[in-house]
Length: 195
Image (cartoon, rainbow, N blue to C red; front, side):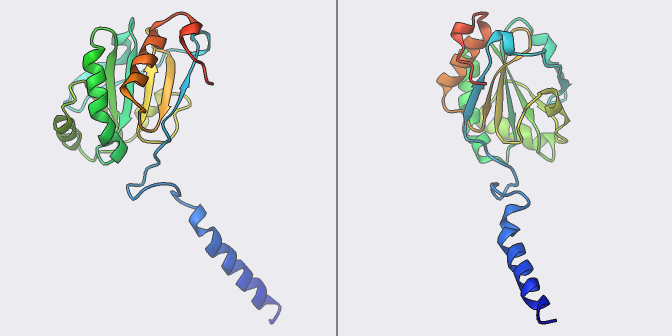
């Protein structure tokens, strides 16, 4: 019995020491992981297959990525309770206005309990582009290699293939502009492939 006591104490200490390594470590109180804003871009030859995604928007309309073929599409994954999502949405709206006609913008709302919450948030920041309402997260299965961070932004080329991905908050509006230019180009020299 006396030999078991040190082993039990050691097991208890180990379990307490590793308790912080389980669950959602690295998350904030909202239960989501925020990326570091790192950007990965792919040259045209390395972009893979077109993304197939359709769904209902927050206001109940149908949207299909295939309808945007022919120009780049910026897809932003967000939730109104995500601080970095809230911070970058006005920047995305500005980029959407400045790149009108050159690129389309589409949001994917993944965690709001109701579409009304998402719509209220969009109104508060002046977002005018549509967002697919996907609280179950299934819409994200359309994007291979997507991490679990919020926010997350993807830039698709005119064929609907993933050209670039930003994991976490967008560093700047210029980043979006450059990634859209890269997605619109058929030349690898315009893209800094980091994958």
